Length: 352
Image (cartoon, rainbow, N blue to C red; front, side, top):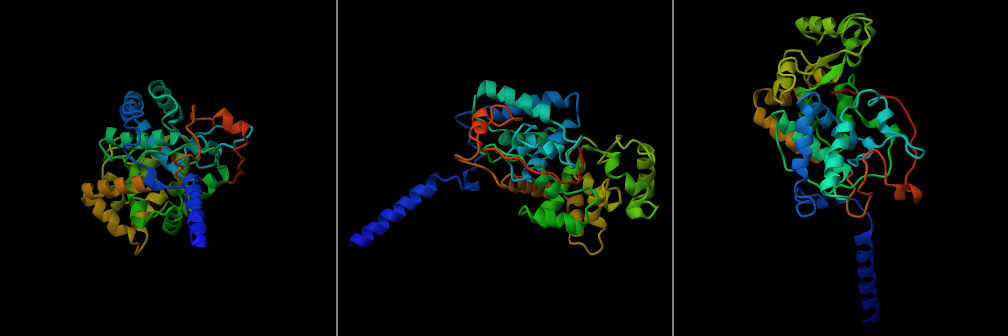
């Protein structure tokens, strides 16, 4: 009897111990997380983004991309927002992000407005998730209930940013591998790629397709001839690489299904875009065809994929912190030595 009681006490101790340890738990994310502590957070975020987008239509696509670039590197913990410090090597200087990330100042504007209404309550990671959803709706795209309750990470990982973020010249197999490593399916890959229905990309990310694809001295054969000439007019051979081209030449600032219709007629801007449709025998072709004819199907898949992506590696409960400023960990965390320094590598990805 005593031995049974001892086992029961031990089990209770283990349950109690594990109940307070910071293990990840996506189940803690809830759209109503701030219903009592910051009930107007979504409206605050929306108002800032709406005002910015009046003069910068690209910003809506940039904020969606910012959330993506956060979640693919050690999870959705706002690590992409951290600036360089004595203890942080910023992901912003990773090759996929260098001179291409946009919206950092807008996130800071949002954080300032949210802090004024609800001090020390809403994480920067949740602000990124909300900003992505609201950017979609403000560009006539789908809306969804954003699961909330993320906390902000204490570290950045520039090396992982170079390693994990897909590149604009990736093959379909490479894209699938990158998404699968995050627990995302082929349908998720095609749906999330649909975010390229709006936004812009620098010539440097696709100029090789126009003049010297795979060192052949010829353009990419999967490029529509008329579209090729249009892009060459924007991006001359040997040019600076900084001019911008719209991902979707038909409705560049609207969130719709035209991205997939463009792929069907060989008008994908990046090689990684066109790979979804032009890779012989690929299982992605039927998904592209479906989304090209059924916008509702695309929207539903995009919503599901964004929620799924937003759950990657989240910190909840007592993990991480609620940053006072999105670009820096709180000073107490630095004093306690809870931050580390990551190394660097090289890679590349698209810009919006």
